Structures are given as C-alpha cells and as structure tokens.
Image (tube, rainbow, N blue to C red; front, top):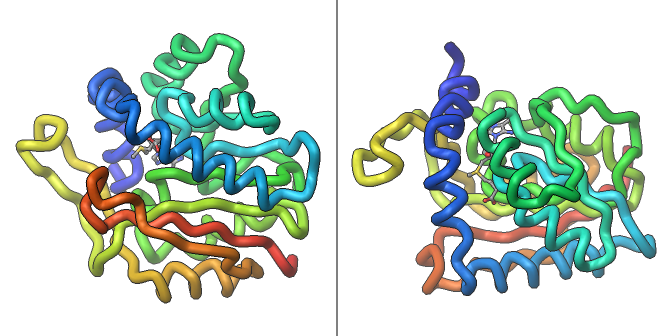
Length: 211
Ligand SMILES: C[S@@+](CC[C@H](N)C(=O)[O-])C[C@H]1O[C@@H](n2cnc3c(N)ncnc32)[C@H](O)[C@@H]1O
C-alpha cells in the first residue's frame, strides 16, 4: 500500500475523533477569516470553490455562508459520511486530489487546508499542476502547510492512537517556488496564531497568473 493510501486508511479510522478535535470555536473563527480572505481575492460575485480534503465539511459551510459555492472532495469515505451528516445541504464527492474529475478552469477558487503535507514531495508538483488545470486563469488558491524540513510516515502514540500518516514539511520559500513553477503568484502569507498551533502553520494565498 502506498503512503497516501495508508494515510487515508488512517483518516477512515480516526474520522470521528479528528472532526471533534477540529471544531474548536477559536480555531473556527480563524479559519473562517482565512476563507473570507480567499473569497475577497476572487473577482467573482459567487465563485465556485473546491475544498480539497474537506473532512467534516465545516469549511464548505463557511464558503457557502460567505457567498461562495463549495464542492468538497475527500478520499476517505468515512470522512465523507461525517461531512454529509454535518452539512446535509453540502456538495461532496469521493475523489483523489491527485486526479480531479473536473473540467479545465472549472473553479474560481481552491481551498486546501491540511492536505498538501499528505502528498510526498516527489509528486507535489503534479498535484499543483492539477489544481492549476482545474482553476480559472486569475483564480485564487489558499493553502496551509507545516513549516519544517523532511518528510515521512509518522506514528505518534499520543496522536490518534499512533496510526500512520504521511507528513511533508516545507519552508516558506520552498512552498512559494512549488506554486510559482506551476503559474501561481503569491498574494499574501501569514502564520496561524501561535496559541493555536505554535508557530508552525503558515497560510498562503496565491493567484493563477499563467496557464
Ligand atoms: C489533516 S486533514 C484536513 C481536513 C480539513 N481540510 C481540515 O483543515 O481540517 C486531511 C484530509 O485530507 C484527506 N486526504 C488525504 N489525502 C487525500 C487525497 N489524495 N485526496 C483527497 N483527500 C485526501 C484526508 O482523508 C483528510 O480528510
């Protein structure tokens, strides 16, 4: 089994616990601010926004509430069950972010929270190319990532019972370059508030400038 399949199998097992942990009011407020910022950057009244690795669908709720139209995708079927129960009115599909079943230029925006680090770096460029294909020219993508170096399967007994998940860590420059090589230009970047995740999570917004 490859490391992505292993990671998704873990999310199938930990879905309920993961979703409970992420619904912290303080975190939700920051996430919604970042989603509003994504919508602010998109030059369309009601943009269609892809939520990559949507988990419980809470970000789809926020996108729809703030005048976007969200489609959430996830490779974990258990996560999608959580999403459909949390947001019965939402639009969700079982899909791999590495192979999007959407037409070229289908989306005005892409929201990608907590997902890029589950892609091995060797395949990251082709994943970003796939996002660029599915995004309109001048569309905007928001990505958050964990600062650091290296990558590999992690099994921490204190985190989700030690089930394995793949993590790839990036520097800010490294992440910017990954997207720039696929036609994106950075709009802005900030750190998540320290009290939420230390200073390890960065949030970046980028516009697709060339196809
Ligand atoms: C860390 S969680 C992030 C969930 C949510 N976006 C958030 O910010 O809380 C990663 C999610 O990505 C999903 N995922 C991992 N690899 C994927 C892939 N190749 N395609 C689609 N979803 C994937 C997992 O099932 C999981 O729901």
